[in-house]
Length: 504
Image 1: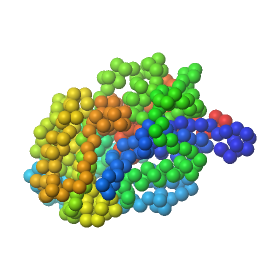
Image 2 (image 1 turned 90 degrees about the vertical axis):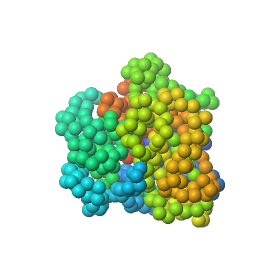
Image 3 (image 1 turned 60 degrees about the horizontal axis):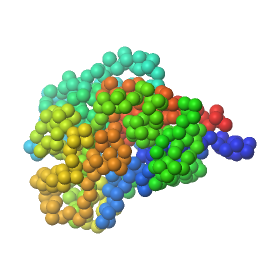
Image 4 (image 1 turned 60 degrees about the vertical axis):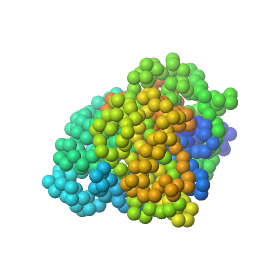
């Protein structure tokens, strides 16, 4: 289409994409394949958004996403450009998916092997094996509806929500994830093992809709993978696809406002004052930030300041990136270290919004799969602790270092003996950094919290309800956070954005 337009003396329609996270880059590739000239505008000095890369002291640290599931969503993007993902990026399966360590030292290896999982369940509670298998069948049923049928559906009309309501009720979507798990599994520790998944997308297992139980089957269906060279290799690969389509990726280009003409987006104005004209605008910035800061109040009657103030936002994230002068070969690629409390800790994080003395941690050791991310004989890590977002009033400038030290002491006493003496590199990211660097309201790690009343039609729509030619992708719109959700939000554009030929 772009060639046809050029032959006719008319430039192809221009699409501006705000932000270069997974959602923005995937949107740009899909729009390029649909005939648009694409400009991606990134306010930071490096692309990737939450998936950017930190390099220091010879170590490579992925800032955010470390788990790749549903790799077909990435393969589609390469296919749209006539290429193969495997030619540019190596995805390596991780086994076990996660090693879950309880506070008493017991551990559970969570994998995609059905027989191994039954054996692990039986090791803790033989009477729960049958219930576990029923739960997985229920997870598959939710997956078939919630992911395969609705993952890239457009919920810009309430009738679409009404159509899925019978399935939502039949599958128990009104329950919480923990509530549905508890229907099938009785052992308290196994209830934790099979209900923690919403935390990977910013949700509280005791309030996130049971629809998110689909994650259990999604992981079994496609596995859990790691990108050799780090997740940043995906960002670089996607940027190269955009360049190959003739698109551009501008860094240090902060968008200050989306410019409207007759109720439609017609471009953006940068913080520098530059105006960039566009036929359509796609925002991969946080949806709440886009609505509140990039649009005038008159253009968002549904998502007013009052409604955004009353919305529920995900928890914050405290992330410590560190490198060691020694290796820890007995530590799995992905470990989850559970603290002494489950529901009580989640209540502190999501409801009481206080920084507790105890914590549960996700420990990522990428050098278990790829030694190139650290100097010879060394290990790279990041450890993530869910914490209250900035609505808590926590002053992270003073709280960060004591909290890091507490985590370091816990890791040294459990999985990483000699940690403090072997530290070579250290970097911390707090909810304040998510707010300042990534423009995440309240420093929320995943944007709007994935509760039922903020899902599907109740979430900011992929096609703006009130501004023509404005579209949203990323964690804050449908279907939600997590790499599969964010990539699927770009997939929705194929349904709601006109082909470039319709605008020429």
